[in-house]
Length: 98
Image 1 (cartoon, rainbow, N blue to C red):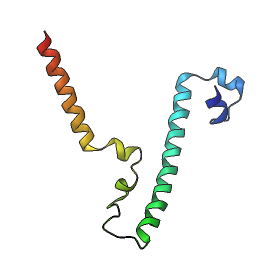
Image 2: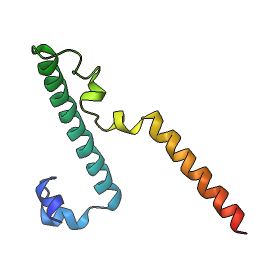
Image 3: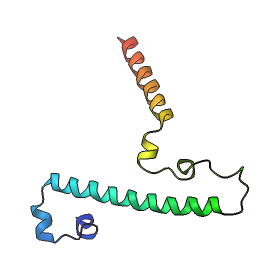
Image 4: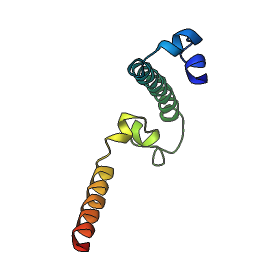
C-alpha cells in the first residue's frame, strides 16, 4: 500500500479500485523508467572514467563490464549455459532415482 501511495502517487480510493493487472502495468513501467535512469548514470560514469588519466590496462573494456544493468545482465550467455547444465543435471538425477 505504501508503495502505491509513495511511488505511484495514487489516492487511497484509487488504490482500492485498482486491478492487479493495472498495478503490474504501472510496476513494469516504473522499473523501465528506473532502468533508463541507471543507463544514463552508467553512460556518464563510464565516460568520466574513460576520459580520465588512469592506466588504460586497468579500465573496463566496455560499458557492460563497468556496470551491468537489467537487460545486459539478463542476456549473459555464461549464465544461460550454467542454467542449462544445472537443469540437465537435475533431470539426470531425477531419472536415476526411479
